[in-house]
Length: 391
Image (tube, rainbow, N blue to C red; front, side, top):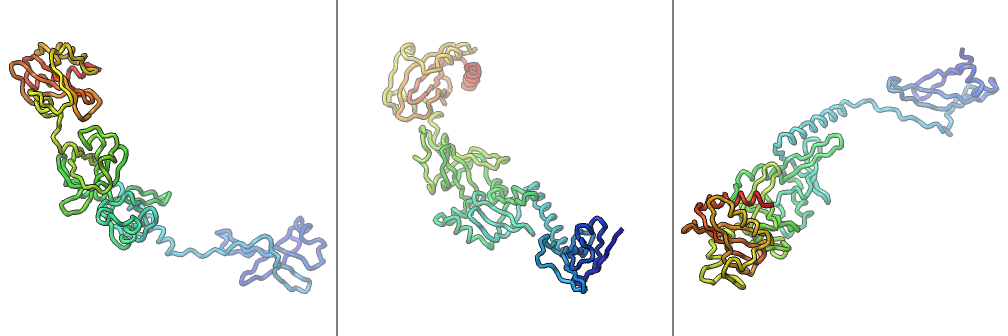
């Protein structure tokens, strides 16, 4: 049962504070010797559990003052909810759902560039500010103004509308990422077919190949493809940088289209006549005028087969329709196409039951004569069966 009560007024709120008998031992001893300190709690919206807590100094004359040496701290009075805040939160949540829908559907979004930083562009997506990293820009910008650094190009894009795809929409971590490259792929990849030949510009070079920006009929560079090191030249290439440099103008053939990964595979060497498909008379002419450092002939038994070739020839003789296999001559080329053993069929059809193969490894070339009743297609299938058996 309370033994004392006091009424205190602070600002416009009134509160009654009760002390129990146990509390009076700590707060009111001796009980009637004023002044005493009381703690007054002034409620504000009790349902939110916010309080003003003050220490009041009450004298015997009834004067009351606030203790300025308040050590317990003052809890801030809450601001009443703003209906506009709730509307903004609802709008933001709805926009994140829209961003996820764009990502899942693959639709292109046209967003305004509102700024940039050292890593990319800031793109507006309704109430959300997304990000487009510089590596995800279409090559159309850098190819149009190759002399400008990327920061200057970005400055010129502020205020423009850019077509891009949403590639990441993570509401929990507040990450919205765009790609203009992916947007360009959706639009322009439909205009490309395997076998098409494009003018292009080397964008950058890696150890494994060169990335080339392709120029379209509108004169702009919209897509980028990779020329693997093996597709740069028929010659053996040790370092792509020895042949291709950033900014070089090249012609390239489209040899592969990966719609799932949005990738183009290009080739320069396939624009040239494939020496592997030339007739053997061009590689090792019968009149001995081949473009070789040296040429030797004679009985096949006197020529040591290239590494791995002897087993293949033995297996060929086990095929139905092939009666004899021998190495007729060999030579050494001035250039190296591959260090691996390669077998080529002659373009000429079999004549008088005789057909010719060509084996090459490094610079060394060997001509092989087959005695056979098979046609060119039959020889090709027989050779395929042999290669499947030989490890």
